[in-house]
Length: 120
Length: 112
Image 1 (cartoon, helix red, strand yellow):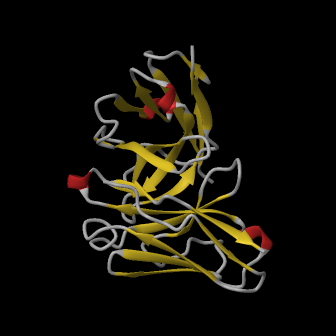
Image 2 (spheres, rainbow over the protein chains, first blue to last red):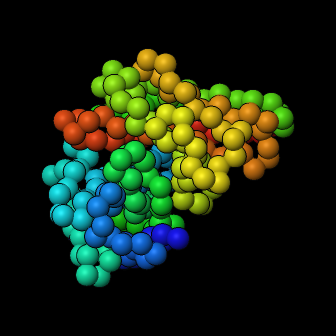
């Protein structure tokens, strides 16, 4: 059973960089067939796709966040990471990592989510 | 790629059916069959219920079904049960030139 677990600071100051890591267990992060994605959900709101990465390092980002986002992957650690710079209160959200099946383009496994609050 | 449009709420009595719509454009829902639906209970991560418009993952009850017509996709929950009360989100792929994904605005399903 594939499991994903987000980790990182729950509080980030405005203008700083939000950094989260997703650790994958129960399946290989370096096998083809999947993308590794970040999604966020503002409090009481809907889901917003941030971007995803392939094991080769190819990345795809939401245009609205593209200038501030970087997703990377470390296959040796079975992890992929999110960095979002120049954060504001509008970036306060629950951040989820998820696996995307590349042949069907749906999110089949999700982490439990982690709340990140941007505040001084 | 803009958010897909869903009705904010839907409801039905136990045993009844409810259908949720998800309206996109000819560049996403209308162009590709990569439409999926997610169920989210309060404080929990989303769970996929339907993928590729109408396919059910293993373990999802056959009370859940999906379809598509033009630029609009539909999720139908038949034989409503109390545990079906949740938020439901659609998602659609919009192609690499559209930078990939959009989610729907979400629909709160209430079992009366």
